[in-house]
Length: 252
Figure 1: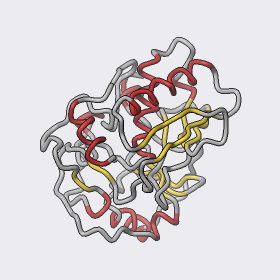
Figure 2: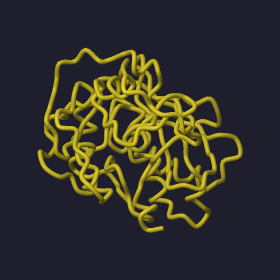
Figure 3: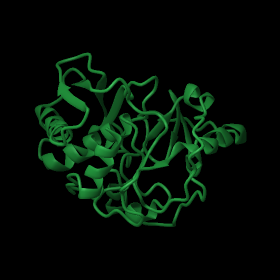
Figure 4: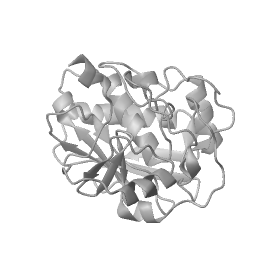
């Protein structure tokens, strides 16, 4: 159970046993993502534990020439939310329990406190980001994806297997804020070595490719406590660190 709890934000609610072809893995690698453990999902492919890539994502290889060799610094993708300043509405699926609504408000408040060019507001339905709940007996906490066409990724999947009315609000808010971070273009701060937050064997891609751009001003070494670390322990609260705030303000 302890190992499962540490495996944060894993996969889509449904996956298949279909093998992922070498050609597809090459496309994923060209985008700068790790292909270890990649799985086919109903909507595309799950990589790095909680990132959803569609077939369209694989076809749209970024043209940025920024290539970095990473450790655990802060990173963004080549896809960002554009048309700033912008207000992004956030909604929850119908019937979401009150503790999910409260935790969503916690996540939104953390972003808005930074006075970014992105402002988040919760709406009853039809949000630009919609939080959908599902139940799956697995180590999945949640999943999301990256912006497309200047808009945030539209869906966050949250696995209610891990959450109840007694779940610490700040912990659940941290998970939601993490997935919102992906939706607006942030990668895991330890994507080059997931063992930093997840334990186990080190996973290192070498060259980060064109899908991970170092954010100037953030640490060049391990970024302890970051809201975008790949894994999190049960009940852990990760408000924005000083480095996180730099990453947010330098991008938005």
